[in-house]
Each structure stands twice: as C-alpha cells, then as structure tokens.
Amino acid sequence: MPKRAERIASVPPYLFAEIDKKKAAAIARGVDVISLGIGDPDMPTPKFVVDKMKEAVENPKWHQYPDYDGSLAYRTAVTSFYKKRFGVELDPKTEALALIGSKEGLAHIIWAYIDAGDIALVPDPAYPVYKTHTLLAGGTPYIMPLVKENNFLPDLQAIPEDVARKAKIMFIDYPNNPTGAVATLDFYREAVAFARKYDILLVSDNAYSEMTYDGFKAPSVFEVEGAKEIAVEFWSLSKPFNMTGWRIAAVVGNAQAISALGIIKTNTDSGQFTAIQEAAIEALTNPAADQFIAEMNEIYTRRRDIAVAGLRAAGLDAQPMKGSFYLWVPVPAGHTSASFAALLLDEAGVIVTPGAAYGAYGEGFVRLSLCLKEERLVEALGRIRAACGGAPGSR
Image (cartoon, rainbow, N blue to C red; front, side, top):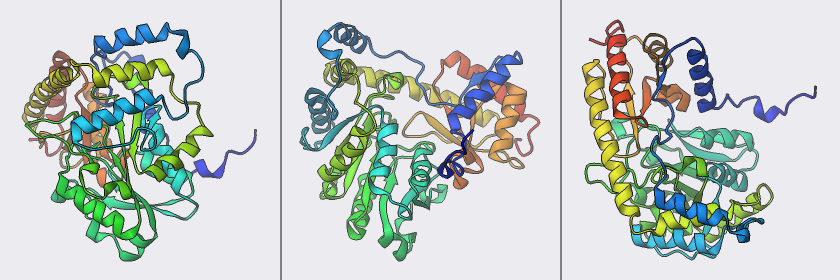
C-alpha cells in the first residue's frame, strides 16, 4: 500500500466523526445514549421549503450541471437578504458565490490564499476547519486565544507586529461556535481596521447570525464602512432553516476574494444542485420565513433556560448564551474536558463535546448542543446531575 501524503500526518481525526464512533460503541453496549454533542437541528425544514424542493426536483431543467457560481437567482436572493437583514448592498454577479455548505467554502478560501509558510490568524477555541485546512495547505496557524475574561473575543492588539505583517488571512466567528459568544459592531470595526492596516483578508463566519436571544441581533461585518475592501462573509441556511443536510450556503463580499475562491471551486466541484438552490430561494424570500426563525429561537431560548437551570442544579457554572444553540460550560474541579466528557458518557450515557477538541484554549470546558426535544433534554440533565454527585468539585 502506498504511503499516505505527509500533509495529513498532523491532522487529527475529525471531531464529530469521532463523536459518532463513541456514540455507536455505547449504543452497541446497550446504552440509551442522549447526545448533546453535535449541532444538528432536530426539527424539520419548514414545509414551504420542502414543498418548493418537491416542485423543483421534478423540473428537468435542473437535472443538468448547475452553474459553477450558483444560479443568478439564488445569488440575488442572498444579496437581497443581506440588504433586508443588514442594510448591505452587494452585487450578486461579482460579490456572491453559492457554496455546498459553508464548510467547504471556508476550507477552500484557505487554499485560495495560503501558500506554504504563510500565516493564518486562527481563533482558539474554534471550528476545527480553520486550523486543519491551514495545516493541510502548508500554512502556519497563529492562535488568537478566546478567553472568558475578554468575552471570548480575540485581543487583536496582542498579536505581534511581525506576525500581523506576515499574516494573509484572519478568521472571526460570531455568534461563536463553540462558546456561544456574540460580537458587536464595535468589535467588527476594530477587526476591519486591523485587517486594512495589515492587508489581511478578513473572513467572517456568520453561520449563526439568525440564532440570537434576549433582544440581541447579530450584525454583519459589512455594516462596517470599508469592510468590502478586505472582507468576505460566509452565511449558511443550515441552522436558521434546519437545513444542515441540504448543504447550501453562500459567501459574499470582496469581489477579488470571491473570484479567487471560485478558481478553487471550479477546479474541485461542479456546484450545488440547482433544485436545492431553488428551495433555498424560497427559504430566503417566503413571507413566513421570519416567523419560522422567530419560532425556532423561542424554542432554543426555552431549551437554553431549562439547560442552564439543570446544569446549575448539578453544580456546574452554566451561563446562558446570546447566540448559537451551544452552552460552553466549565468542567468541575479535578477534571479535564476529556475526563468530564468521559464521565458523562460512562456514567450518564450523555455525550458532550470536550472543549479541548476545539483547541488548547478550549480546555476546561465542554460544549453542549441544545438540538433535542425538551423531554430528552430534561432526562439528560437529570442524568448529568446524578453523575456529578460523585464528581470532584461538583458540590
């Protein structure tokens, strides 16, 4: 068997694939597993989107190869959404690109900008794709710590001058996965000014923009003047419309960066099925869309409040998030994130994600996803409380 490429030697197994393996092994042992591990909405895609998909998939017009950039109708729907939601003007022809889910776009933008030895500014803890694909491309991740004391925002002033001048790309992700933290326009202004000063491509991962609570509305980086000179933003239908399996998203912003990403994509994939794009247009333009998102957020708010109360009853320092559907919870004294996650799986049959899986600065936390029905969530919380009765520092 030929030797595998050296570039994958430093890449750990993908986080959620490993969680799936642990879940399968526990189920095989007869455990009634409750997973709080993966952020995959448990509720269905809205009916108006499904109905549009049924109609579109029967149209022979869409059975051939799609447009590489995505249909102009879909890109126009995305830019119209940005105008309505954020007050941002974007050209659908040059400043928007369809994606097969935002994950592939985030990975490919790295290959469009990072050569061997180049620096990428990567938050930690963070979605693993940023760091992993920087390594695969031969680049060097420079870690921007996200710590509680700074509200899980990177301290841009702490980045050394020589690193900033060598960096080519910087990732920000708010509402944040995994911490649930949010960012204001003041932070985006700082990030845009930093990127402009050092000629860095600013990549905003805004996949959770519609999932916010307690009156907070997540901004777009393009609400900052001058952002289009140096930024792109990734936006996905996966979470707000319960469409994770549909794999449909978009990137908007700087036309040169969009073009560079397009070069990677046209040499890698053939675009997303146009029928799915038609369904996505329906999601973005249907008059019922806003109400659907509001109802989903009410459900997540209720689940959040139930979970915070239950975790506090277990002796854990749970704080309510303002964005995403994740709780970022400190582990009890005497535990690492991995040992506490193992305790909950072994003694409670509950899967949570160890924070260290998101980077070194995730150590000491676990992430809980609120993607399950309330009755199962309540059961999981009861099991966690029972398991923590014997955990050091839990009382």
